[in-house]
Image (cartoon, rainbow, N blue to C red; front, side, top):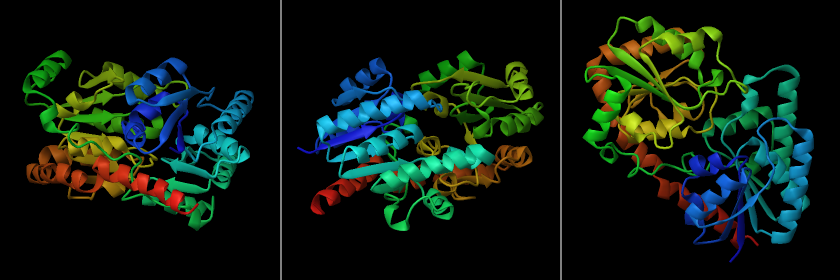
Length: 382
């Protein structure tokens, strides 16, 4: 059986971005998962029934550590002789693709699920652009996980068009629509969580799921929501703060701490109960690849308010299963929030369409089979 190595910077990405995909691929290839954080990585490997290999990858710019990781991966690839190395996340992509090329791995695939450089300027942007070009140059195929990302990559001239392909209709992993469904959370669970969080039955609950950082549009979201002080609504923030990497404005932090209608619950391994007690996802991100959160919310029957950015505007059709707004505008977020609370006909229509539009296009098995077919086509071309 041919070897397939899948690599991410941290195991959390294996767990969340590629949930259960490696177990599926293990029926067709000898799969090895590569990432940092040995203990968590090994736990993931046991859970998925795949081998693991730890490498010292970091999410920050750490030149010495990166060179060490490059050497570690080069030696590992030389020893294992994989047929395919497939990387995800920026740092794992750069180090993984360079090491795989140096080691002579024949098929070097990189999935692009977002471009951090889109929100940078000057020297930092030039550096990140150079890194992207290096990554794609070392890869034999590049998979943007949305059509919008593909267009950006072409516009930036990061690689030749023939290297690029969007698999299926987008997404890195699709969605398990049986797992993410309204029936997956009991009425008792919902009642308990509402009591615990101080949410009453008649509250209209907006939910955000993701990292609580500036890039996700949290400053604008909090500013917009703070204008709804006299309305019967709550804002539920599900996710970790990253004060070192992308901090919020002091005013935003202050509002989150002091507004009784804003509820924070931190990172949650299972987000379904929180979707189940909510009415609408608000996801005003500045940049995305193909956001799982928007698919998850839709599969749970929630309409979404999303930014008009790639990925988001491919999952949401304006006026059908959600509302699309310009990014970085608290005024537009405010309009979206009030529209969905005040226009019950609009809200009902969006909610009615939400699940069906996700299941039709992004059911997990469809995505997995499409990726497997990509792998098998490489075997046929040998």
